[in-house]
Image (cartoon, rainbow, N blue to C red; front, top):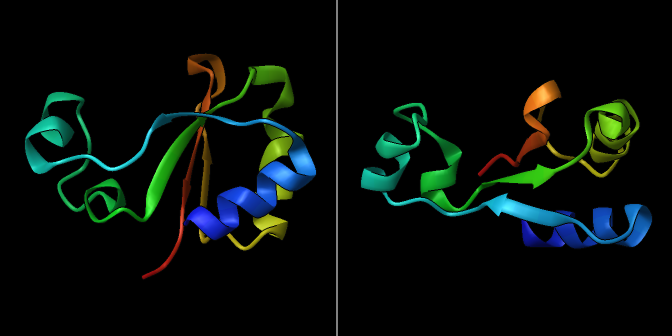
Length: 83
């Protein structure tokens, strides 16, 4: 995850991670799914303005993230890698 985030940062510029690793308790508190990759350190949410999400997601896919989910008006993109 960190290597891919660093590669993405190198191409995009600074990224602001709003959620990384989550313990099971915190994951439940924030409404995360039961098998969230956040709980194993394989996912991060990155703040991205809605109007930039399309190009950010394309770049993230090029960098090899296995899951790239834009959250439009909520202002972030979920990125994950396979374990």
